[in-house]
Image 1 (cartoon, rainbow, N blue to C red):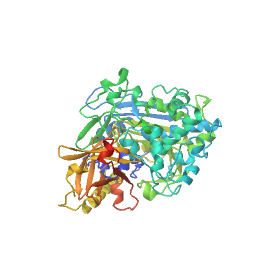
Image 2: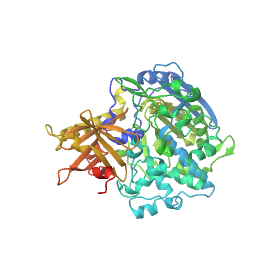
Image 3: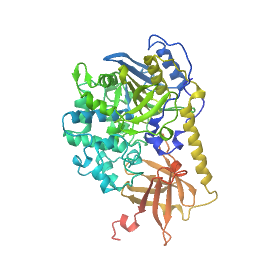
Image 4: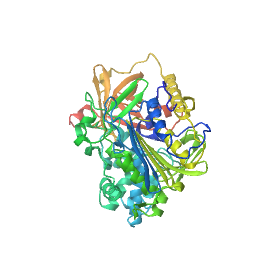
Length: 558
């Protein structure tokens, strides 16, 4: 079995990072069955996929495999929306999530070839307005730092719950204290990759979106690839932020613009399959926001990667620049940044790619997760093999299982089987989620109550990072609204601490704590965006909001 069956995946309790993309680091676990190797790498693949989809309750799925300069497989399975009959084919469009990062890195490599920038240019040389909390770090942060997750300032919750644009998200980095020392570790970060996209725009004299369309998609003939959801959906059918949802409104595939062959996303649990509306995430577009593509189009992207920058006989990017993106840039700690997996040794992160050693062979890969979807792209450079897998179910384990089965076939090693008992990564995630939740519940003090009546906590609260959020008493409970998008319910935890439940398909389990001043008024609200990590680590990220006085809200001078 590929899926753990009746087990319910409880990713949402294990920190907000899982809710906004760090799930993408989930690796692959395999057992060492030794079936005879098949001569044809594709033999039995169709049956394997169909069985995996059945076990995982996967609505739709597409795959493409490239060998040298040929597409040897491009095929779709299942349906574009659960409960409907419209089939998935190799032209069906899926969200590709963080596999976009490699596209951004390659696009920057094209500019390196043209002499418009260098990997080690300070960011401020191209974006004078770029500013981090520390002035020295601001001056010394390079394009390479942005692309390799080693600039340790990570406000991923900010773009996930607001409608701020890319420039505004970048502007607010200056108010965020770093999570750790500069260049000291790998720290997955969508916003810094987005800044790299803004560097590209400044150097190229056009937006990241326009550059990707004209300098990547067009030369590769990728006519089914889009950097924004506006090409596929009407604005009113798009949820306003990554963790948001459309209230009292259902979206189905019939509403896609011009009958687009697009797949809707799904959340699959033991309780059933839920169809999700498409969601706005353009504010981290270069890192994996709204870019969507088909398996057929992504096969063209694979051909460029496995042919060292050449597509159909034409050089798009130099072999040197492309290889730089595939080369180790920051070492990974297997114990803290990966789950164990058989015969796979995590080595490093390149620029937009993870780099592993699998049985002595270099594997270059990246996963991508937008709510409702999972994408996976992987390369065996020395074999000139590439695979892309697109699915419309969030965090399905089938794509990584399938990718490694394909790699085993092309490497000529014994095929490995999967089973419920050997789904180590999923089980470990669930165990950590349960342990973290148990630790939190152990800290809760029962029988307490807020210091003040709930209406006294209502009002506007401001922070330089998030701007103004509003807390309002509705139907006897507190409700928090982030700027322009996310709504959350505040449930009393103990004393003046409240647990924040996001309204939408995924709850991150955050906490807010109110502080009372000497006059007995609420003075501050603190948002703890890493509650489960805070149980065991002193380095939790806490953002403080000052309450706006009533006279200031009404325009009366303080």
